[in-house]
Length: 77
Image (cartoon, rainbow, N blue to C red; front, side, top):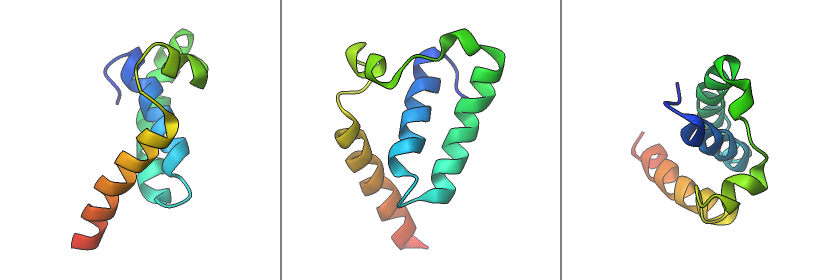
């Protein structure tokens, strides 16, 4: 489960940006976010706000970073 509002919103976006290429990983990350928001629905912020707050620099950069990390790990299996 995400530890705080920032982490939960980043997890939510991460799940969205990798769902096409890494659906199983996206599902797990998405569940971590959903569990947090089930307890703290008021902490959910729109995606553009996550970038505006500086929690991530951009969606493409987040996607590329996660794809590199997950792709590397995927290739080990």
